[in-house]
Image (cartoon, rainbow, N blue to C red):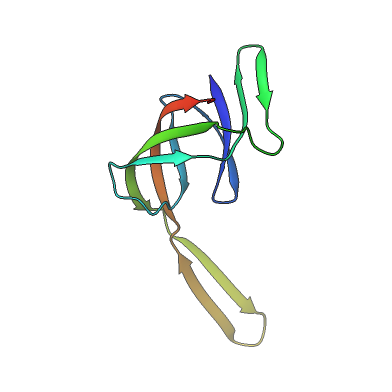
Length: 104
């Protein structure tokens, strides 16, 4: 069974046992988290589509880690003007192991 969930403004396809890497979730490491915005769920040939979400459906998972991603450098400049600006950014993310998909 698989499901498409929405969290942090993005959509993810998940199945039981998957490790999801999504935007930061305000939960402690090791705690349970529930995603209620299930857009689509399917198993084999049968697919259930929500309008916009499936009522009563949820996906449960356990938070494995809260980490920072690799640093990216953003360099802006204006040619021939001696204007330069260098910024770095590290995105926060959470790793969640999907434990259960329930359709109510």
